[in-house]
Length: 116
Length: 114
Image (tube, rainbow over all chains, first blue to last red; front, side):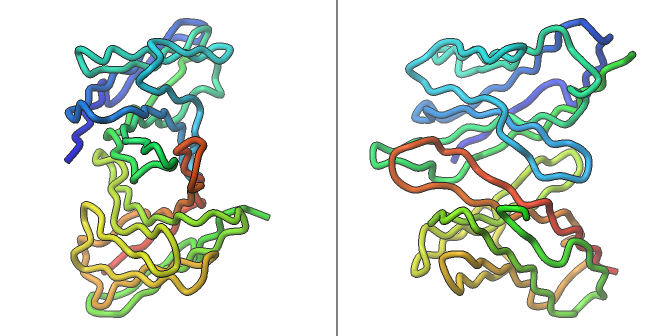
């Protein structure tokens, strides 16, 4: 089955600086790579995702890059703000032609701390 | 009201007791999932269901069972709870058919087994 490794487990950055979280996956058939943000006391929420036919995707201060050859993908947050403090999870899955994902395999999470 | 509702939100029980965690959704999604979250281990899939008649084991199904009572309801049971089942449990839903694989999570059920 799929195995997803995520690093670092904790990341502390100064407000306004950039943060980068990295993940690797093992199954070359995986073609869908989402990132989830979990705030304290809440369930994870999708913030951005990328499919294997795309190398990079941006949404305001958040970007995700994918290197299929190396089987790794990264989350980039620029101009970090206090509200970015949370736990972030990467995940990998296969989206079938008929649609839907067959269950996500998650990384172990990164606790991002934004220092004022 | 939340689209994915879990009950109870918190539960403390004793070893050997039977526990049921319930999940209901108003999103109209066919697919429902139960995940377990432990510190430092991320989210691990326990069971998932693609429709009322379809139940599948996930990565860590031992010691758990599920019931899909209706499209909107998916329950997780611990027949005889043990302390290493102490964790935060999440229910999630997703669409079937063309579209994203996005999961929509409930707010979690924290279970403590003494």
